[in-house]
Length: 457
Image (tube, one colour):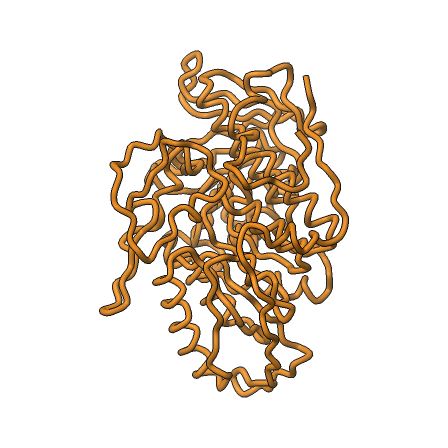
């Protein structure tokens, strides 16, 4: 069996190669004066300048979180939907005016133009998952640090390629798995790691359904959307435009998206709840039991030989299942760690333990919070900015994101194949399984002229 290998590419892209997918011009540089936040003056030497790539609801949420981090300035934005770039510019302008900054934002359809800016330190990526690899790798090669929304990539190979790009270009990358910066999850992980509930035997991690085949009817592409560019490297003729996968907005009057992009729920364009929420709940589970950078060795799909739930087995004997973590709310996403001395349940705004003495009174919470309430994640952005300055690894580093992404992809591969899949986390290879190795979620052929850097077939 062939093992996947990464092609090492040192330094930046050749300029002609880097710009080949769009006609780019050299962006003019802007000198930005110091400004104040909450009465505290921020010197130019302390500022961090950002560009935003992908301006849907998640991109707006990430901007709001970054806007609360001292020293952050935003210079440019990019999206394949011209209405969304204009919406972002307007919202940014209101914030800039409120902070006594110069009101200005450059808009781009092609993200490569934004990356060509010498005055941008880092980018925030909130594009659909199939664009993450090219966005992040090109950003690294352009000398930018990266905040990339979860999951890190669409396929296993893409995640590995991003990891190589970050390392080879000495970049800082933070994955948007913001639960790692949330107090209830930090507390739960700390208790598990300290052995407060003994040896962990089982983990119940509720994330939701696996993706389904793309079945939306074809619609006419609106003039404000470059759908061909939205598709990018996706190489499946079944995919066509529908407003569910590219939610529409209007500006006069302002009408925001009625749903978040449904591309995530379809096999051909996303990885379902398995990755969307798995990048949160599976991610925390991995961290708590010391499996960052590693993962399960066997994946058993729901229904196989009567299996009631998707099951993942670790080499150390721990078994993680995708199932309800609490009986009173079976559809809520969350985690239950079960040890030989007790249990801990954790979700967003929710933390309980079998032994109440493990938690202080102000740490025990029962209500929980909705996904929308949790999306403002400034502590996670602050960690990223701090690590940009210190050059240390952030709490959700590229290695973390890569191993979690690999887990989610493998779970979906086993589900689609309708049989167990065995994986070696040390060698990053399947165990005697050519069929799984040829699955699109391990690797897939990019649509021309797109190519995945740092990957050698």
